[in-house]
Image (cartoon, rainbow, N blue to C red; front, side, top):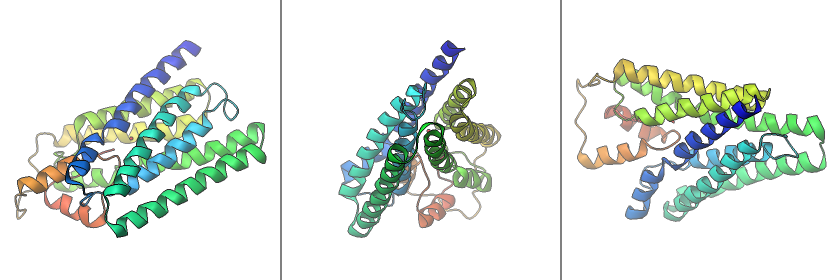
Length: 259
């Protein structure tokens, strides 16, 4: 049973790493253009918080036998921190201030959870407190594709919901869900079971609408520049800005979701 749990943990690490690295296309574009354009930095900051809390939860003195949870989320936290730093460097002043404020808020939440768990709580109470915090933000992160799934249904197009991202979201959630079940750990099983279910729904939508050309009607054909921008953003592990979502609908676009 322990070997089986480790196997699913290793698979979960591999699929989660793929999801963490998926936005590289977006940030390559940002660096080349020296501008964040219309991309939203919020998903990366929130994913950073999720990774920090999950990595903390997996530490032996908080939750024994969950070191694989810490390794991948520690790696994810480092990757997301780089994304956030790049976004802060190349974003306009107003957006920079917003992301810096949110980043400070994230660090404050993580620091509070870490300090309270170390100095005020012990044993099962520490695990419960850290587990609940990690679960809440994991569900929020996994829930980010809901807006994209809605767009797919409205436009009847999966053009900007990449199949492999949907597949790896499903595999990642499923692997960690089984890992949590084998370890009798609801704080790992519940949020990843939720993520596995959403990943399955994305795959179902993909196979329903994969051969559909989407709603064309009065929709104008986007320029190659706009299409490229939206395609790159489709690799983001989160949702676009509100006005950007409207633009995505107009060109049959947007993306899926990360751990």
